[in-house]
Length: 483
Image (cartoon, rainbow, N blue to C red; front, side, top):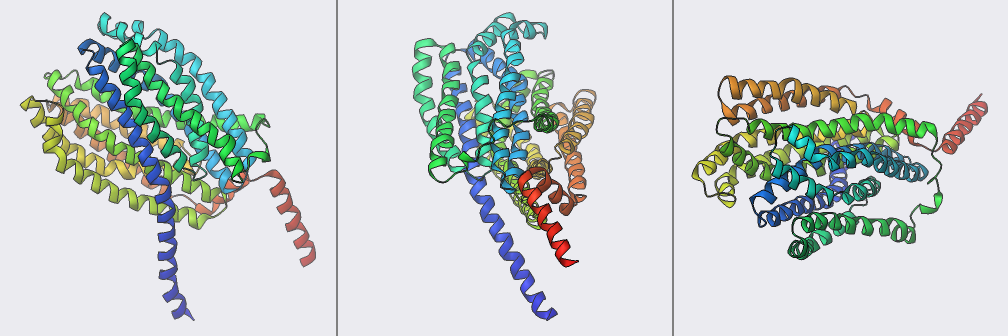
């Protein structure tokens, strides 16, 4: 008997692992396509801005960076809390919790957009106080004024994406994003010819508006017709405890996302203070453009890990949750080595696509070697972040980011770059050391997870109260009958 079990166990394990990989592939590939189209839209916008002249390009780029730091990173971070709640709710088949969380998250993001919009309206004063030139700051303000509607659109779009992706419904997100980015080129071309800078800014949020409308139509009509759980209700049944739980998770999720996004922006700002600032900024900008392509894959793997782990924990299935975690981790390690290898292979041709300056091209070839090592670590780091978010403990990622990026990476990078005069290489070396520390901390956190306890806790939080009461009555009746 034991021999038979030992023979069947590896085969059973392999089958479950292959099934998990198939499930993750169905989530990752559409999300990857969606993220690719998002970065493609940004690149298209940048290309059209470049045709308007150096001032428009510099001002709009500065304005969009400000928008990312103060607006989009905050909204996306807050949306991360909805992702883990809805993921566990879907695993527990609690569609009422899915519905009420969609309404609460949308309301919260709309509320947060109000103070963000006031920041954008005063962006020129903020940038001038930070030492930026007046003309560039005024262009940044003009660009952001016409980008304001995107705050409202993003407040609807982020929850809709989380609502669908946590239910493993990713094809509509991919198709709507692909259609939108295909239309983004003619829309931007038309508006840039008629309205210039303001038109390019308007074209950006019009594309997002198209995606939002398509996803809203899918949720309201198509899902219902295909047997969705639309009529189960729960949309307006929010209670104080629901809001308290959402807000408790929103803080760490938002801080984790913002700390990660801000670190790259600080890296670019520090690069601008090097002796050869123009060349260094040109090099890091070109290298980060390649990094953004890989980041779309990282983000897809991270979201997939979060969704799969939260789904299984909500279903009170600790073994499948653990399996989803290690399959995601293995895929991230493989993807990290592939991404790093592609970066090394492309370092000779990537620089000339953006610049004719030989010094910049040589710098890109050199820095992409170092950046490739960082990417090998970044992939599993992103997935570890998705795993801890799926367990409803996003503050672990926040602690790791603060320790790795802000307490080690940035101070060490500044010392190496400015005190030891290693320049951009010194900044990225400090960055790499910080990323390794961040990965080590998350590895320890994940290794210490008690999957059975997390599954029980997630199921109790996500399941319907009626189901919990029924389970309690059934168990008590079984105990009485047994006695």
